[in-house]
Length: 301
Length: 276
Image (cartoon, rainbow over all chains, first blue to last red; front, side):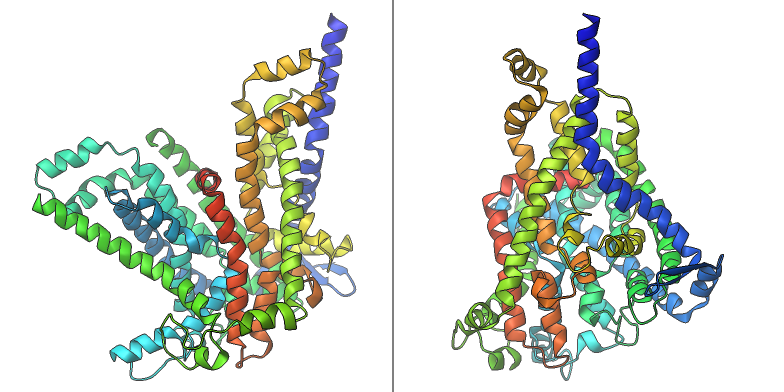
């Protein structure tokens, strides 16, 4: 009997390890080894062509922090997050609340709203670049209405380029957060709305006095998740400026600067690693916060 | 009562306006794919082409030598990547849920920790690794680091944990080996979870931009998103908008089909993404 048990245990061990081996290998190499390597590289000067590394202490960090470009990228990223995260969160809540009221064609609306979330960043950016180009519909509508005297090259103007990406990002990511709100809204007791209606509260009042307070935990979670996403924004800025962060660094984000330093003409992989580590530390802090919020929110729904 | 009707009207107004804001860019692009270059860049925001033409599609699929390759490459990578992920994620999830062995909890927590590491910091070391492994400019550079997905390992683990033990025990009494039980009993029973996993993994491979952009240099190897971006930036200032916009529409169609056909699995996946 005891031999059978031990054979079973051995079999369990073999199966357990065999089934997990590919995962352990891939995650071990491309995540755990990689993060140690990233820390290592941030303290070295790296010559990618000769594959030589020289220890330089904190030089990469001090150099990186002293550069004007880092400041610009930092400010752009903060500006981007400060506009996009609240806008996305608010828009997602409003649309979810509207969808959750007893209306017809809910499924059809939901299907339509979700479309941008499914589309690749490349295709979306192409569409927006043309919509906001000189002959694009956005200019046609604005000049037609007399809002602006003549067409503006929105994606090539220092003042507007980042704003176009903001608009695109709000538009394409809000529907994802909307689905989180929709799930949470199912748990708000209908009696609360009925009571509010009996008290004579209008739809808008019900939204602010019942929906918003009830959604507070999930709003905190959505907001932090949105900040995490915006801090990492890369694809749209890269595609719109073809990697340059232009015009005049107007769309240069932290993630794009890391890319430029590491893979561009700069050949400054060590400095890029230092910047990546700092950005990662910030994002990691927000992730921990999001995890905590998500846990707190669980009993609620 | 009047008040109720008014607030309902407000809801419809919000929803219809937002639906238009969502749909208009797509519809405009769809309509542009049937217009010629002059009409697209000539201004106007109408959705009906003046002289509808299939020229853009013909140009992309029959004249352009690279575009059909990019479509095939994207299908190839997404399909192979999805198959690998489904097999490996399911095995890992099963092992974590159903098999007892030393170190299981340690691996579980290590994977949980790995999930919190932001991708930005892995970009450079992963590039160096891919470079050293000799995988630059090959699909291994995308398929190997993307061979497993921790979110879906946990998703499968959850699924297998809620699974009744009786069926598996009956199978083992019937003489099936533990591996036979996994492949012939557990996997077929996990079909809904696998469908959810497969749709999302396929979608993320199909839409992926950063890794192909970093790792693929030869045009003939490009994926669709990378090819679209490169064709747009190639002739700075005189972009062939008719082709770029048509290519964008082509890249959206497969996703749209999957979304419509597998909507049920999609919504399940969305919920899961939010909880990770």
